[in-house]
Image 1 (cartoon, rainbow, N blue to C red):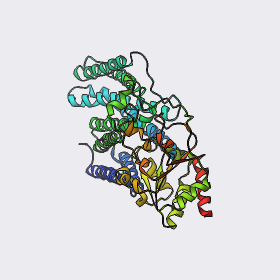
Image 2 (tube, rainbow, N blue to C red):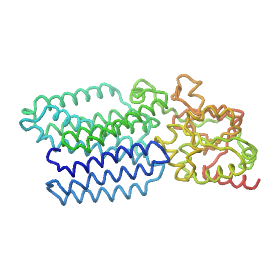
Image 3 (cartoon, helix red, strand yellow):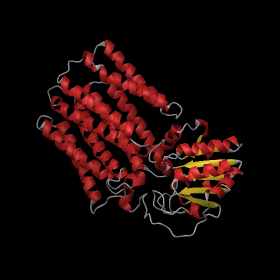
Image 4 (cartoon, rainbow, N blue to C red):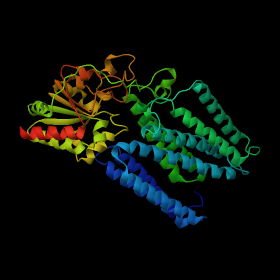
Length: 464
């Protein structure tokens, strides 16, 4: 940044502060929208300012690329469904890692010149390898969530050996890039390094089961942040260094929180399938008898309750039933019934999925209670209404050693006096195992599409 004018450096400082404030805003559903806007402003400023002081070449291709990216991002973000948000995040994350790797490849020839600091070569090699890993891994996570490929772990004989060998080759090529820059072809060697990184990314994510994919997306997001930070060092760009460090740190922290919410380690999530464990079970439909009823019976149960807790899940997002659910909760509240939403950290397909979904329906933030704050209140609940959730209320996490979700902290819905369970069918949740709560004498199932069923339930409550 030595050749950057002072006014431009101050502008970059403003952009970096925007990123920090954005991260702070995104930590709360109440301020998430404002935080996102602040971060967007910082990103736009950081991109635009370059055109006013830098001696840029190839202006036309740059402008065309920016225009195409802007239009594509805007249209994609506007059209994407809430249930597809994790796929969009995976795509954006992969593009970020790939872009960092490409920039490092272009800079590699200059980095091999005389007088280049050794650490610059280290940062360049690191950016190429980890950026390629992030890109390839993110594309696989996108394909799994979009059901373009199986969401089950993809294994083949000798996978651990191939993966270990790929890691060793990547490390050897990176060391060669740093130690022997004069005898190592810059561009060709960098491309080979990137190809091996792509292989490592594929082999890293293929064995991960579908239920663990959101956690891997968070981990790859941290990888992308680190590559951007390393690329910022190579380019001498402070705002990239700051922004990448923030993304890397927050992604790492989020990955750890999500793994803790699943009751497992990150290593187990990544490599558990290699030793026979996975969060994706058989997924067979049970024919065990359950107690079910119609909307009218459930309306009576809700109407005479004094305390109700709603447990939303991915099925609510799929049905786009959040607005109907909010109407039902508002109606119960008008009748003096205390209602809160219990939010599990990994409900849905990504962190904060349920918060965003319910905020879209203008649910008051005060009614959104995190797991650690509401778990002790289930014993006092007259009714728990489970809408589209399954694994996050499955008692097997507490009672069945060896189950894929054993040890995962869950919402204590099984402690309530009555449970109303909205399900489309008896198919198990994403973990692929039966939920014993469905067969509990206190549980009544209400079958059907969540939006349609909640609509009938709402009408039945109004009629009382």
